[in-house]
Image (cartoon, rainbow, N blue to C red; front, side, top):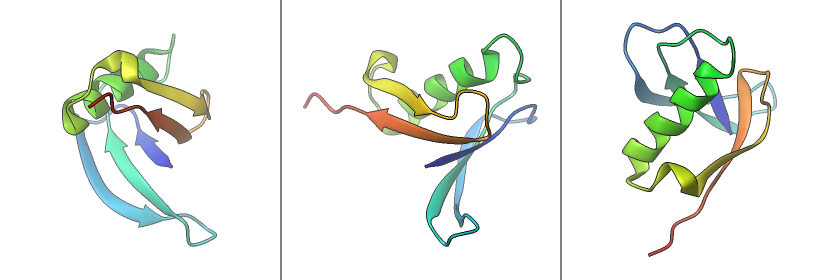
Amino acid sequence: MIYLTPGAKKEEVGETINDENGRPMLKVFVSPRPENNFANKALVEVLAKHFRVPKSNISIKSGHKSRKKLIRIVDDS
């Protein structure tokens, strides 16, 4: 799971936090606001750079309009 923080000053992958049920979530910060899908697109770019995979290998499975997102990352290597 990802916890997205849009509107951040710096785009980066942050620390791991726990949700209300104790499940780990990776905190990610992006600059764009959550309008017109800009924050989700920035999330994919940040994750692709962090995990060194093409953007096409990353998809948002759920949470398109939420801060909490389920992400799928495919590693072709």
